[in-house]
Image 1 (spheres, rainbow, N blue to C red):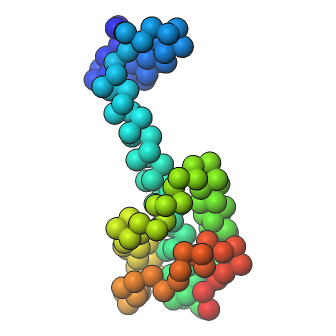
Image 2 (image 1 turned 90 degrees about the vertical axis):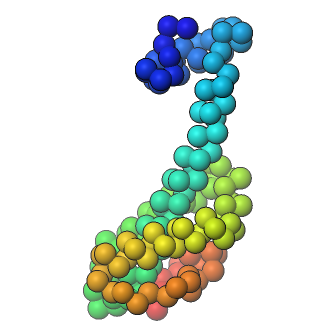
Length: 143
C-alpha cells in the first residue's frame, strides 16, 4: 500500500476503493475499512441528531416567543422537517433511532441549549412536550 490511513485518509480511501473494484482483497486494509464503515452509521446518526435539534429548537422558539415569530423560523422548521424526512427515506433503519430515549435526550438537550441562546428564555420544559409524530408533522406549529 502506498497511502496509509494515518497519513492521508483520502488517498487511502481511493486506494482501498480501487483495490475492492479490482478484486484484490488480500491487499485491503480490513481493520480500517471496518472502522470507516462503522463511522458511516455514526455520521448518519449525528446528521439526524443535528437536524432534529435545530428543528426542535425552532419549535421551542416559536412556542416561547409568539410576538417575535418570524417567517425565517417557519422556513427553518420546514427545511429541517424535509431534511429529516429525506434522511429517514434514504436510511430507513434510522427510524429506530427516533425511538431511542438516550439519543433523544441528547437531541432535546441540544435543542434547549440552542433555543436558550437564541431567545434568552431559560424556562423551557425539562422534557419534550410533543410526541415525535407531531414534531415531524408538516402542519404542526406550537400554539
